[in-house]
Image (cartoon, rainbow, N blue to C red; front, side, top):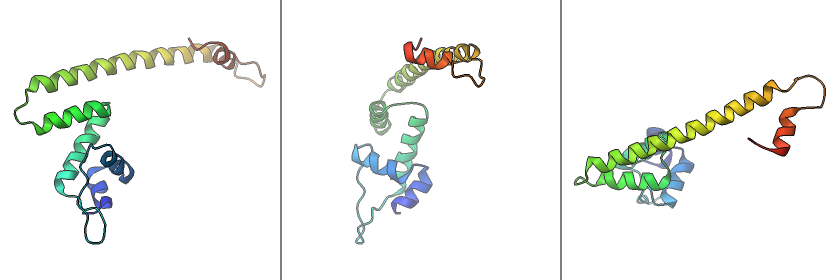
Length: 131
């Protein structure tokens, strides 16, 4: 199948497919006589795997590790579990940081009159400090 078909089947944009090829997350597919890339079902499956890992917030390096573990039928599930728990911990830390940003924005918005005057404590806070 061509890149457009692989994109539709996997849910990964053509641009990202090319990017993943460029950084080695997916192997370069063979080319047809016409010069078009020729993707197979295994490529689509790999792209879905990558997309699912990205949806869970894994970075490129972690996805490389997960792909290696996925290919290794001798792997220990403990290795996979460890990566999942590390990612869950990292997401928890990000969630705390996002919640702190949200609270700061709400606090700043409460201090703003939101009227036609140019004075704005939100702008003032951004100009002087973030936290």
